[in-house]
Length: 249
Ligand SMILES: [Ca+2]
Ligand SMILES: [Ca+2]
Image 1: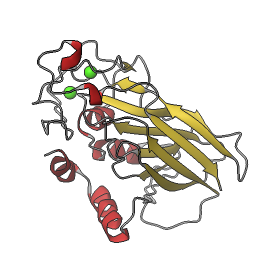
Image 2 (image 1 turned 135 degrees about the vertical axis):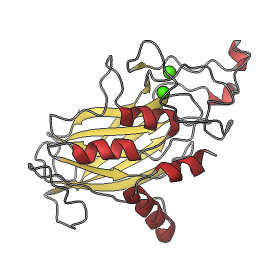
Image 3 (image 1 turned 180 degrees about the vertical axis):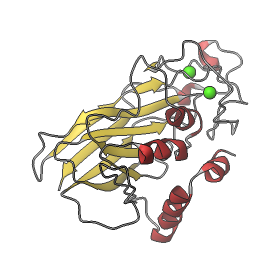
Image 4 (image 1 turned 120 degrees about the vertical axis):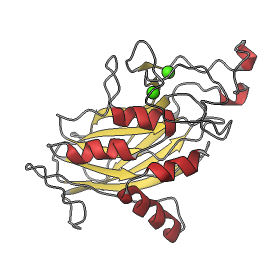
């Protein structure tokens, strides 16, 4: 099952985060990781951050649960993904199976300044709110989450500049859908990991040509003539698919 495979693949950091979600009994959760310039990981040391942001994520789709989102505040040197470029191993795992551990590992080895928070699954029509702090004066915001009833689609935003925000200001940003370019959109029961099928998610051996991140063209489904598809009309989506409300505290 999708959730089961996610748990198996999570790092201890993520498992701890999931446990804290259960214990807290709510959908809000924080999970910070700060790197200093020497690349040392200070994630286990609670510190007071210079500035804090509340990020509320809303799933705008009809029947596409969004996998646990990774919310990242970072400096100019980091990019979780770049349109037109091949996906990183971390993005591939997230986009194909909702697996966050590899992307978090990439964050933790990044040598610049970076902080992240990890959310829980966002069901269609639902929202979650995360709080994330940073010492970066003019941070960029990246959000990434898989559309679970797809082969390798993910939504979010990449390196959105928060540098001009002032305290108590709120903004809204809508996120499109990208195809990670790491798996063919065959929509087979065996390759769709979400509740639509429970097939296999992440598979490094399953490739797509061209191997690059592009805007997603949408799922076809049986109704659109793809007879092998396990998806139906409810799994189709329009852009945008995620609404991101950002408040600087
Ligand atoms: Ca694809
Ligand atoms: Ca793959």
